Image (cartoon, rainbow, N blue to C red):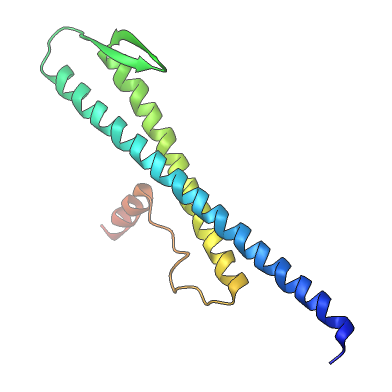
Length: 139
């Protein structure tokens, strides 16, 4: 072996390890974001459930206290529900995007490490519209 080639091989190896480390770190960051968003989604779900229950038992429009930032505001309950539902949709969309991103990053990481990917790892779930279309065609 030629001794002049060894430092460049070592540099290439270190560079590939650094790339793998950076990709792994990005997967960890994305998963942490998923945990934070999931906790936020659950808090929204709890708030929505309370507001639905409150609005169901009242005959006249009711007002509710809602925290917006660091201040509390008294708003129409239905407006609060609408606002939380929009927020919930945005969170769900962001979670789905992050989950897709994590899948891609893990696939790339496995490829960089020379590992085989799990079968079916890249499958996507059916949307409600797809399911209803299938049911309609079967009937």
